[in-house]
Image 1 (tube, rainbow, N blue to C red):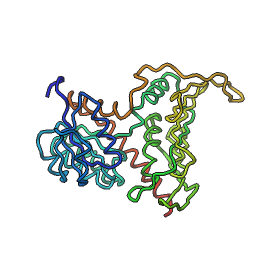
Image 2 (image 1 turned 90 degrees about the vertical axis):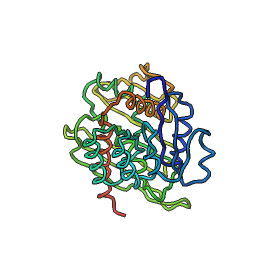
Image 3 (image 1 turned 120 degrees about the vertical axis):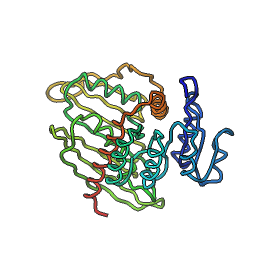
Image 4 (image 1 turned 180 degrees about the vertical axis):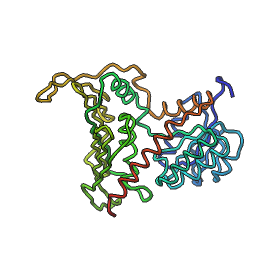
Length: 319
């Protein structure tokens, strides 16, 4: 494979998010979806004619003609599939969460270290240009004084993944990525619970307290009034707000000393491609890592840390 040739990827899973991967790969000239593993007989209609479709994910990994693999299946299947890809010497991108089991997550990191493998986790909001600009500016503005985050919608209602493991990875990943400090304490409570025709609905409140005293307050749920993707990071005299739903995805607010009120609010100028979609950037970064033979596992380590925080939260939420 040379830089002029497309990176050939295999995709395991053609469910709701797997189809998003398929649509995204179709418009990326530098990456080719070469193989798809799916048990749905209708999956052949989703891909180009030159993509080989089969039912067996194990056969996809053993094919020998791929540069990397994407795992986009329910979380309970992630560990087994990622392990097989690592052992086959294939770089692997795993949909969030890395796993829904802490022991499995730690074992994957140990295996990746043993094989010196490239493993990434698609915490997709970390690849949003507005979030990346927020993180860049946070390094300039100094110590973070507080984080508030909220994510959710009306639905989805899943049988295989609850609200904590469906919505939680996004917010927890951003908070951990920004804090630059280990988590000391975690609290979790169920604020609201309601049965709906589609399934169980709930809203959860999580609090992460880091070793330096920083606190991140997180609210997630699938019975919110409308789609929500909000992250506010407070500094001494500034606040940065990433809002994935608003027209202005990133706003910088200047604050007075006392009382802490807003005196100026404006969207900062991005230093990255403003309109690049986050999944595009994630896949392009994965392809660049494959070409460069990168063995960076910082994203995998973050994925393990996210699973550890969610596991601690899960232990506090009664059924």
